[in-house]
Length: 369
Image (cartoon, rainbow, N blue to C red; front, side, top):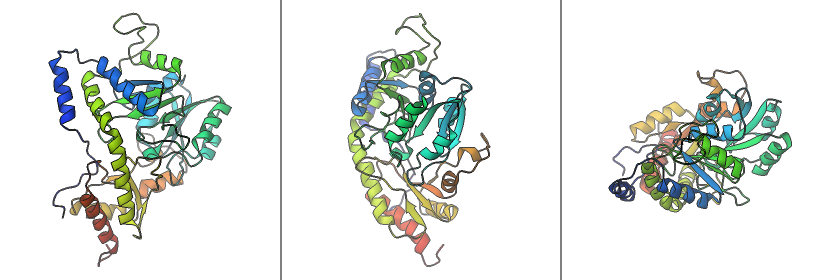
């Protein structure tokens, strides 16, 4: 019996993070990024297999810097999925590049490669491939790599939701593009409150990224500037938390998969509910994403049963911030029917069962709400 409100998502911090921050403060450090930040970067690089990792203050700026580092400038076009968090297009729009929206695959919610091909113009400089909820495109990551190479454009991976997920060829998601980007905002599997990371195997791209995030400095701690740069640095306090979070990542990946599997089993056979598929051998589901009928009624009913939910991203082109014409049937369908169910890593089996029982009651109860 669940007698408390089950939030759709909440971060998980423990005594380890608290102790790490207190220990650091006892050292009388400068708090700005230094040795612990380097340690955190190395842990991400080691986990993903990347040659370089550069952390920044959030996962939107990380995409901005990725685009800049691969040569995107104002006026260039960047292909972006119409199903994504608005940070993806905003990241390039911020410096004058033009996001060009393309619909997504029905099951993976990743870019539809055939539509991407049609959207490429002489102004296209990059493709931003978002691995929605850790999933790789059904068309295959190699197809996107080949397309980018053929057209002479950069492949950027927005892997914000994908730490702990892998491509079938054994590479971590984020390794296929010239740059891969992760987010550490509060809902992510690893959180530092805010924060982002960039991974790359390209030494020159890594050099550009490090200068872009730190005023264009030629080296740490000096005031000699080889190029234009900005201030998107990390902090040691974030790194203290991140180090402890990374130590917990393997166990969290296992639990995320268990959570998705239990939802899939408990929701099976309910007319009106469809769980988005995952290959658990490769993917650690970030959120539990489903398509549902009568979504607004379900949301209200679940709230009455102490269950929080969150509507999945509506199409970017339908939002007032962009308000663009076009036909995007998959993104629009998700905008109408997509729903995220409680997905926190600390979710108990009893809580999952309560959520699923409430959903089943809504669709199959005596009043067939």
